[in-house]
Image (cartoon, rainbow, N blue to C red; front, side):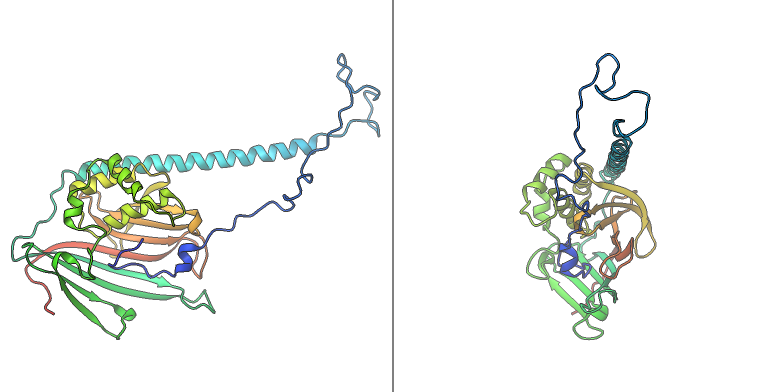
Amino acid sequence: MSTDQFQADRREALRHQLVSLPTLEGADDPTRYRPARHHAPRDLRSGARTGEPTGQVGAGQPRSHRGRTAVLATAAVAVGVFALGQVSITAQSAHAAGVLRDVAATTSTYTDLQPAPGDYLLVSKRGQWQDSSNASDPSETSTYQQIIDVYVPGDPSEDWVMERDWGIAAPVPGQIDVERAPDGAFYGHPWGLLNEEEMSELPRNGEELLEWVNSRYTGGSASRDEDNFVQIVDLLRIGLVPADLRAGLYDALALIPGVDASEQVNLDGVEGTAIGRTEPLRAGLREEIIIDPTTGLVIGERTAATYAIFGFGANEVTAHTAISYNIVDTAPED
């Protein structure tokens, strides 16, 4: 996930690491696991092989098939486990789809905060993330924090204001920047993926929105499903998507395979509904947005390493944010 607002500072290696799938030793030998084929003719009336004694156990007795039966049984169990896993994933996706549709319905009736002229909508994001940047010792990690406050004016002719506390990641210790820009173009382009006018032109129907997102696919992701999920979440995580579009995007997320839902808290401890997706081909990296189910507002994000890798423990949260919304009457000065 990548925008110019606060993002977890993960190394590029984490985004491109592929899971090494174990292979069956000796599977490159096509004859190693091929069962022997000895087809002696059978007496069709007795079922015994012609020329072999019946009722005796000895050198002439047919080879036992228990080994082959065990292999088949093991394979059947493996297929069953895989099938159960697929059923579990399908059930999780179905649950998430139901949760998302409920959130979408609630969001569509919610009235977003609207600042009056002279006031500002303050979208405040506090973030914390870990980084394993020591190439000689990947187990060594550092924790960073950053606060970004974006002030959206009630009067659209006024500049947006951003105050950014870089924390220990600042180029200069203790550095706090204040930036002003028309329409929030603090770095020469929209603060989010799209500006207000571009968002107004998008459809509000979930299927149509997913088609629009899918049409923007340019490769580079582990899959189209991952790319679609990331594009939608990147748009939502800015915290400035209007309610009707948020509702449509939640409906679109409900159509993406592998998406699931759970109850989580943001960095400030506020409870919400986490909508996430785990990507096996990103070393099990799990990305989540946390939604207030009563408003449909995004109140945080979480990233977790579901595998123990790059110095992180299994299921360790590597990035966490909290987002809040308020109307204020002043903004920081330069």
